[in-house]
Length: 552
Image 1: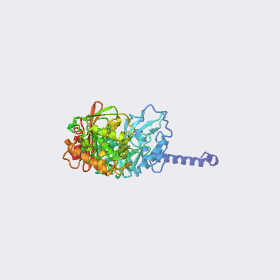
Image 2 (image 1 turned 90 degrees about the horizontal axis):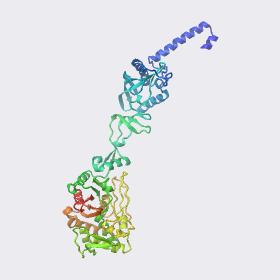
Image 3 (image 1 turned 180 degrees about the vertical axis):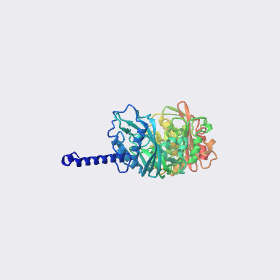
Image 4 (image 1 turned 30 degrees about the vertical axis):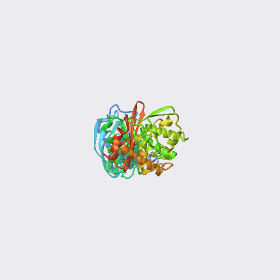
């Protein structure tokens, strides 16, 4: 225009200048009134955050700027709205992300009111307002606020942070609408019936949390609504739910009814509060049907690694059948005591000496000396000192199992290179031999099934196989012997009268006390129980096992 003054007539120039002035006035007025299509001057462009007024803006001033800011925002004039803030470059991108993330169709504001000095932003005046946003999936309403600052020379600005978009939002967070991200905590870990939530069972709460974190859920449908997400898109907070989806589930092998029985059984009054753990399996396929525990450190049902006592005689007998060619009628003299490798061994109280007993009879009354004598004579002195280890690992499948869902279990220990007194102690489940109720339930299941099926807690989970099959001959021998234990032997006080049940009791010495064991199978399940401090297997673990076998 100044060049035009030099070139044109003065009067013409004056007229042009006058017209230009009128045009500029109208443009400013149009922006001030919020006319569509106009572009308003930027308050933020002259606002200097380093020089603030000594007094906050008045309520009227703050409301006026807030209205202008919200008006531009509602019309998606992002640059104009951002220019009313103290950090326009950051604000403009955040406003665009708000619109995109919500799939915003329409935005309006109401009840724009001054709320006095801001309690959060020093020197600012707070302005509150209500938001109505038509977003993907529905209409979302909420209340929010901005803080308005005043520069030392008069310009005002909305103080920008993510809470302008929604109260409490932090840097790096954003809003989305539509299908909401899956909430890991919403995944239900359920029993085999597909509905019973396993977190309702006290003994399964840690297992449930582990499975939820590691296993892949199936089914379900996502909620729709509005949520705050982090920079990676993970849910931070759900703000509005428009439609409720079905929670995804992880189905386990747990039998809800049997789990309820197990939870009660480990608290049986006969145990007098002693720590107890039990596991029940479907002996046909290795599915874990129940896991319950009480007291002790951690889950003693799957991690309570203890000497299993005479329940190990199941594997000792199998080794004598398979590797020494013995039968249930083979001699197994039961003496009151026995010395093996300079160590004295004795029987549990109540076991009477029977020098002419057979292996089956010694098994029925759980004679320690008979099994040590035969094991030591036929296996150790016969040049097969690792026979028990071999039978346990290669026929009964003992090893490092993965039961599924990231649930950790403690591996058993049946050393192959035992020395000294442990060479004898191993045959009665003492010395360095250790196992858990889960392992011993699997031993009973292997006998009844006629072969090893690795325990799992998730259907379809990979199951390791045993290198060698349990022979039909050995399985038959063991089933007859375990049946005798249940009907007329050491387990009879608890299990006599139960059809089709085979069992083996165990009492293991540990420090200054004993632990009670019992493992058994019935028509569908195998079960093992451990009671720490139990005086005998039948009078402690026997109560737990009976309740699981009877389902009551």
